Length: 120
Image 1 (cartoon, rainbow, N blue to C red):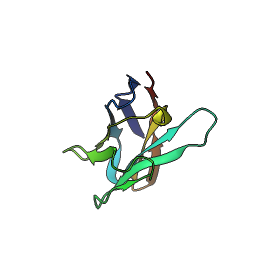
Image 2: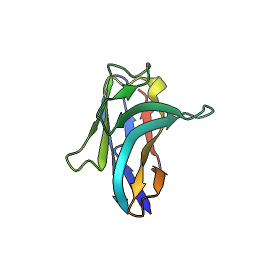
Image 3: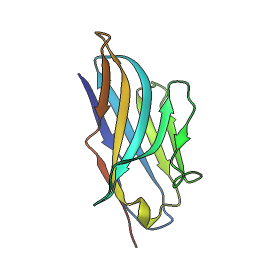
Image 4: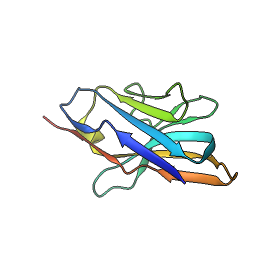
């Protein structure tokens, strides 16, 4: 079983910054893809940023130039640095990790979610 632990959410004023982190643990053989999604009240969950194993990052148009996704040295941690935050960024942010476990079965795991609120 693969377990994800997220941290770093909170309340920030418009224009401020936050950094989210997500660490994967458990029966992991390999990680193919890591990413962040968000869901605002009354809206569908949407992708924010992804970083596949080849390191090529992908971003939603709404966050390009403001958010940066990266991996830790151990490759089982993913970060989301969020700068110049806007009220529209307010949402619950979820970490997602896709890979293979130690029995070579694929997994697609989600974190518990961390709240980001941008308000003055």
